[in-house]
Image 1 (tube, rainbow, N blue to C red):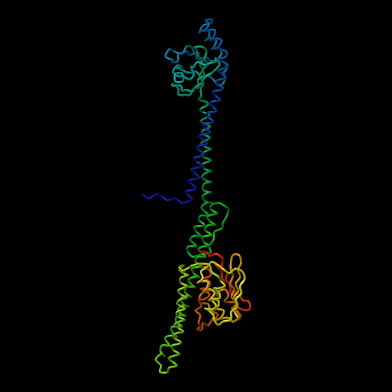
Image 2 (tube, rainbow, N blue to C red; image 1 turned 180 degrees about the horizontal axis):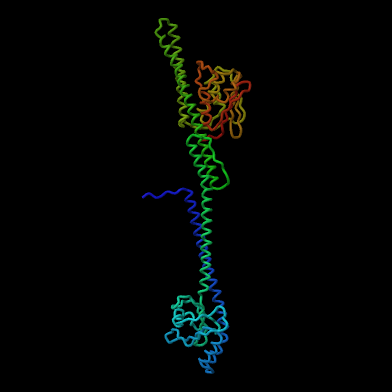
Length: 481
């Protein structure tokens, strides 16, 4: 059987109502019991006070009766003039109550509380005999107990005082007190109902206030799911609901940034594929056209065709190698083997390998040793030197500066510099200063590969113009791996 499902508003309302009703019921019950106990204690105290005055006046008569100076009849006559209702008890050998004498008379005055007339006194006292017919240490120690009149069903307060083997007993009706307490309980019930109604209203209002921001977040989540990545939820207060709204805004911002990154990468990927196709097509087209001239009868033509074919094949090989290197970076599988490297010696070797015929001036200051991958740093320096020789002018200046935590490599040429519109995208793939994309020796991936190799070593690469293009590579002393 499927369990019923309730909404947040219903759950919050039910929880607040349950707490309110429970708290009100407990408070009403507790107040009723405290009030009842206090009222009974006050009634008993008043009754004992009234009975105490009677007992203090009558114990001398009991003493005289026990001493033989008067009879039980004389004691009864004396007591009848003092109170409207009394009873004198002794105990039988088996410990049960034995009614010795009693009186029920009408007096012109009525003490308060009023002792009441009862019927079968022995039967009334029997259930509480072990509490009121007990010998006390002092004559004025009074005992009380609450019992029920079996004939009428009303509750009675039994008060007794002990003298020798006799107990003087009076009965007080608790019915008026019970009626007052019942009226008080009725008032408490009405008050509890009123509080419950107010609690329900407060619960509905609280649930509405809680549900409103939750619905706002839910609505914003639906809009976000529909593609409105700029949707945000207003944050009000500093409670959990405000945290929910703030968390949603953070999530929406990150989703928006992730989607924008994906879109950017998609555009880059599309452009990358188009550029790869273009750069592969150019040497392949040249190679196909050259192949047709290899069977020429003119030796010079065949020689020239072979040279062109070799050039395009080497260009194609470099392009494929660069593409493979870029793909390794994209896949996160680029090999990285750091070791202690002297950058001064590495730069000299890169000059000899990359631009052996160019005029390059090298200056060095400070400690130029770092912990990095020498092959990748060599690739960075080599690509920058080739770029400076190919797109700039000599002389080329390479400056090495060692500081406490890093070494800076600065490669500057004497050319016209980099166009301002290319500076922000110069390290993107297939970006060339040649916007017409004429056939050149470069693949347009050199600077992109230089940046990736710099980043994998934990460094950074920047470019600016200063009487020519200036590339700055900063490598930390310690490798990030």
